[in-house]
Length: 324
Image (tube, rainbow, N blue to C red):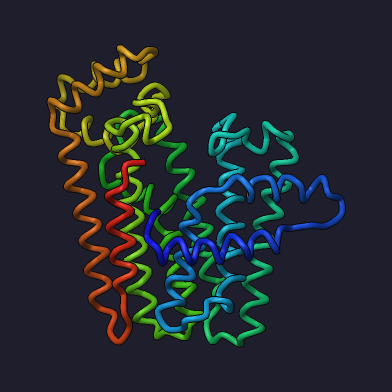
């Protein structure tokens, strides 16, 4: 993300994270936590907390513990996802369970989750918040678990519907973006209607973001994405493009597509699937879906009066226009 204000808030958060890396005894528990926190990333989720708070207050310092809690939670979920996926790499480096071991990654992930709630509960008590940000996080955490299980279940199903896929990514990815904005605005003292509108903005932006990710996997430039072109196809992952193609094909062609997709083992096999997607107009359809959820996100911002939401608008534009 190259937006100056985003970079400013990301820099503030990076400095705060560096000062608040988890430490304790035994260090063998805390070292893997610091390891994943130091793997970098765009820091989109903690910055969204700060952006929401920043709508009402110029100094984001009071919201930094909540931003840290969100980053702790996000990294906990990545550690456990990597274990379930048996992924050897995370952000181009060894995943936690590869660098240390599986048990260390499970315990360190659990500890990050606990620390996330510890931070939020302490924040509630310190600022005497009228509503519970920890409860928002708890509900979001359960939704993310539901979304993860739906994703796992999809791997054993041949024909999930588009609506089912969208609900899965809403729970697995988008709801956390919404929660970031809701929590940031709650700490700022915003009215619940405003927090709800910001949640809707974040959730719809999250849907556009994930569909964009799926599109970039297949149609993106590998030199920009840093990933193999069609990596999802090679892994047999049923992403948004797969679901759209499957539900567009006539019944007589579905079984052949399912078998071909599940047996891709080479660049040539990937190219055949991509050619099919192009002939069906799947890339254009995906772009229309991204636009649909982007416009819903923008519509949610129209309900917020009295504050300047231009930063959120430009952030959303940059997020969906990105090429990596």
